[in-house]
Image 1 (cartoon, rainbow, N blue to C red):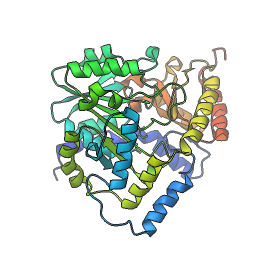
Image 2: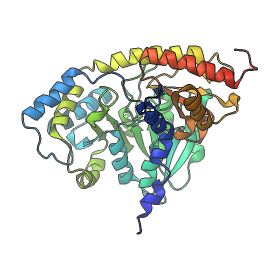
Image 3: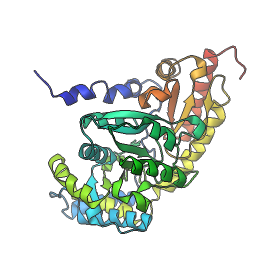
Image 4: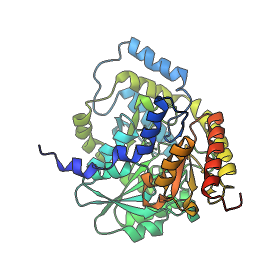
Length: 395
Ligand SMILES: Cc1ncc(COP(=O)(O)O)c(C=O)c1O
């Protein structure tokens, strides 16, 4: 049988990038003593009040159809958040609800770019970006993010990657997998490039509430960029609630009205009881975010303190998010080779850097979302494994 070209464009993406994670999960399910430090699933429960808000809404009969933009209470809560943050008028016409940042990204990309267009993306980048861009028929053009600049995107590097086909600059701040946070100055310089070349800016801000060093800045909040910026986010990370699938896109009113039919065609609305809970989340301070910030910052310090002293390994503190990167190039292995052997020989699962773009060849990403005791046990195993790999070097 014949399949549409989109299946070819996406072949090899998706689950291939998560092969180590899948294998580790299968080993653990079979009874193996594997420590998983792969994905960014919060290790604390969603706040009980959030669960209660969803439960109460279900019991109150909020189980019917919604609409393409979103339930009014949720839409208003999102508009109020961004109006408060940016200090400018943001109304319901600037908001579209989606089941998670992922779907918001998918719809936004489909609405803004198509075949032949180029999307500028920092390299490394979040694992699904390539698929989202390719789904729309566009091409991902990597913009190198250098560890020497703390992995923060530089305007000059974007400028160098621009061609007549460039249509959109995809920013991610705070950044996965590097934990970098763009400064206001970075945003101004990147915004100036976007204006000069008439690019859309899509800002994935799902980690906004998980910054532990540095200050959040967004192109959405810059008045000069308001007509070309779409911000996407969700309560997945801020409220330790990824399973709620409650996210959104905020942007110019014309963007939202043009995308509304796309949202209606894709979804015909989300669950009203989830929308009610998410509205509650946005109108109450998160108890989950401060707890996660504290534990992720301290786990990152534990990991860097051990790994950065190992022969052949360099490791620096992230500013935000749920991950630490380790540079293992001096060990002479690829990230994939290291991750596969670490799983087989030491029963610790980490993500190969290659899953996040070419720039992280020879790096691994370590998740901070495991309990302290599991992190400490994993560090003992990783240290013994690395010393076996590099027996000649001084510890
Ligand atoms: C950078 C980035 N964007 C988007 C997502 C997906 O978030 P959501 O659960 O809101 O779909 C993730 C999840 O890990 C992420 O790391």
